[in-house]
Amino acid sequence: MKENKKIGKGTRAVHAGVKPDPTTGAIMTPIFQTSTYVQEAVGVHKGWEYSRCHNPTRAALESAFAELESGTHGLAFASGLAAIDTVLKTLKPGDEIIAGQDLYGGTARLFRTNYEPMGLVFHFVDTQKPELVEAAMNEHTKLVWLESPTNPLMQITDIAAIASLTSPRGILLAVDNTFASPMLQRPLEHGADIVMHSVTKYMGGHSDVVMGALITKNEEVDASLRTIQNNCGAIAQPFDSFLVLRGLKTLHLRIERHCINGKKIAHWLKSNPHVGKVYWPGFEDHPGHEIAARQMDDFGGMIAFELKGNNLEQALKFVASTELFALAESLGGVESLIEHPAAMTHASVPAEIREELGISDGFIRLSVGVEDAEDLIADLDMAMHKSIN
Ligand code: P1T
Image (cartoon, rainbow, N blue to C red; front, side, top):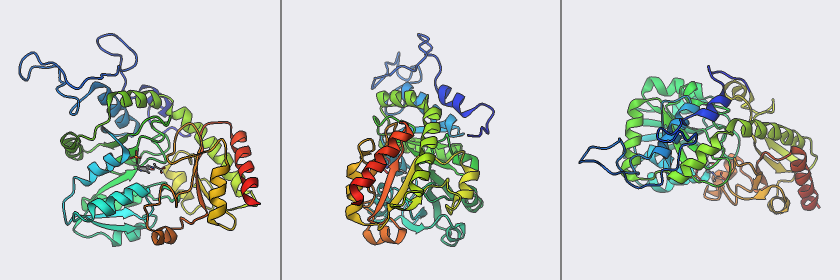
């Protein structure tokens, strides 16, 4: 992984946001499990008033998020969707949003079922093609929302190319960076205005927290997001903030191993006679490979593939047959997961849209963990033999 900042990404991961506790010297930020803070007189306090507004454990995490994403302001939310919801709440009826056509199912569901009826206008566009994004822009466009790599099709969008269209028009560009993590991609460095994470995934890394994050270096954007965070209250809790601060310290080590294992498994799948198409941006023949090689530091541990024949029954049997790969929604934890997007994470995407995008009934998604790659391959091989006959 290349280093492109003055201090290395590993050093940032270990130290971001955390300073010794001023009262005790504790090297880890304590869990300030408190709802409120005592004031000496009305308005005379130590800078902390009420834990929906501010909490020292959450504040340490929020500055860690900002540092890791090359931003200046970070915000921590109760879930990834709560973070996305906060961005949408900055808009008003009549505003238009250009959204990627391949998005996490829950994101698309929030857009279509909650915000479309409230008067926001969404254009779902293939953001791999900047010319289509440009064609969808008009004077009402306020936001472009995209994922890269996308969930689950692993499509890559050139973030800088989209930023060159949004920035001169005063349109905000928000990038859901969940699949890459800041160890592999920092969208603010490519011109994005807002970075979003489902912290539940790689940032937390241990499958024990649900959390979301927003990061920006734009003061005005931060002020409006922060106001909504406080007004609406979907905050990250102190204990969860502590768990994520702990998880972040090994983010670079985990991601390095996710990438090594992901590469081995992607190549093994590609050479397997029972496997059809394999979706992984590290392959030179992946349509987004060149962009990914430029804007990412490595290709990550998320892989999707189809079994040959691409049929539902076989795919369902396969995902139920692995033993090390646990059959579960979510991704980005140390343990490997397998799932069937059409029936699980993307079941809320209408069948005709799934079909149009290529999320077929035989389509399987892997979140490759940090176990030994040989054991993971043996597990997939075993499941292959069980489900092919
Ligand atoms: O689950 P939550 O923390 O609310 O985050 C939602 C979310 C947002 N963006 C992306 C790219 C995501 O992958 C997710 C959540 N995804 C899953 C649960 C999943 O299995 O794909």
